[in-house]
Image 1: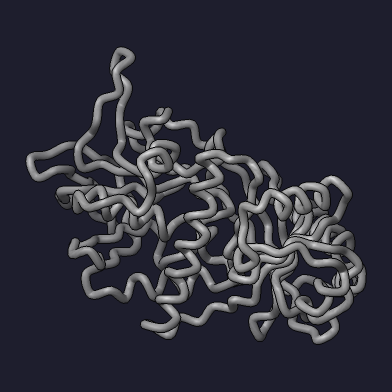
Image 2: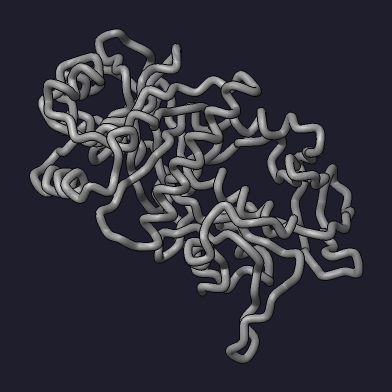
Length: 355
């Protein structure tokens, strides 16, 4: 929309951000790597691009996000060795990451930490739902909710989208279509050949308590976030299937144990508290852990045929807040035939035609 396109968003639910994007708090997550690879280039570039993007939203639109940093605590010797190797590689400036001892980590967290950790000062957390609401305020975007897409077919105008809305069938025609529907890409015949991997994740909410408050995001085997004024988010689980009350309770215990391994004082407080709410959402990823972003191709007798005007933007896993800004910029450059925000080699590892 910012590059001049008129955009129509078709949302299946009655309102936006009803699934994974509806979590109260989301982390600007980045996992640095020592390997000199194209994947490392993409992940670092995406993180830095996202930081600039959210700072711009803060200055231009008063978008509130807590750039409080993130501590990735070394909960075992293997992780500590990995973090030390990252620093010794000389590939990262201190503005991107720092290795802190337990005393320095305690100052950042605002409470006593027993473990050293990797500190990312530009990271933090935000409300994904608020971010979605801000995006949709753009005058070039029209939102239609309660729309169930039934079919997607080529047309003279580009693409014909047939859908069900308000108990009636209808259609629209658009010159370009971008599928941002995660695992539901399987519902379209044009994109069901892509290898999407899906699992569920759970987040537990605890009422804000000064006894468990922290000043930065803490990550280890799980994570805990600073309070948003009402509650703190605790999570980190990946699972398949079972959403029963007993299973949710068991994962809550697992989340608390993960916090206890990082910060025993906070974990012990949570162990004696009751979660005020729990949410379960789907994570969509790929076997190579890179998103699928770009023009759709369809295999035909061993030849990949381009489907003009049809694009994908899916499989961001648990890095959606980090990767979507640069991926949106890449899609805008494809639509407008302008220079990419990434190199050609980086674009190649996220494009659909790599599969």
